[in-house]
Length: 303
Ligand code: C5P
Image (cartoon, rainbow, N blue to C red; front, side, top):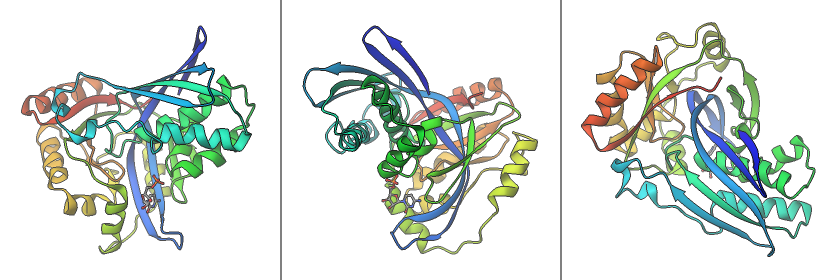
């Protein structure tokens, strides 16, 4: 997360994530699932501009990046700005916790695909907690921000610190930062249709599974950031493919234009391939973009 002051405003650029490894260990009594996942933060950012206003309200404006013509008629571009938006909920949670009566105008520029498993909404929520803590001069410690983040969603804690990479456990909110030895390069493809996270988890519950060790995966990843042996592992990929055939088609399309490991991020529908270099990722992206119908980005892990 990059935070800077611009006159009376505070500007935050907050990244997306990809899951290189995601294992579901089982269903918990509270209805969530226990996870072990390796997340890597990548150089694709939403931007938020915070400005204090006189009233005690949260006013949110969302703008989307218009460069993705494949998404022009897609439901993935519907931007919810009401009370259900995680940014508005993050401001409400902070106000309730601190009894603050301050108001804010937030302008959000979306570049991270929505409902894609890339953590866009969670990243925006984390940026809101960090941003308003500064703008409103609340003086909350990191631990408190983490407690509030966990109330908002399972992925929000990762983005509070935005480590280069991390093992996340529990329902995703327990973070152990990982150091990557090399920058990673990927081509990411999002079909125009999305998937509901609860539906994908529900579908998982009914499928057979043998679990893989996150420690072994993370150790191999730290030895070599690109490894076809390590691959991309996601226990939610099978359930997502059962629910949405665009996922299988996108994985096949990525296999046609790359030679490395291919997989899905989070609960989908974003799919990605690991490439040996930024150049290879860019040229695979332009071949895939030429097919049309999907949003395609060449991106790298953050250093
Ligand atoms: O935590 P978050 O709000 O992102 O989760 C959305 C939904 O995804 C949950 O309501 C739950 O159905 C499912 N989920 C889960 N186990 C997790 C994370 C999410 O079952 N660890």
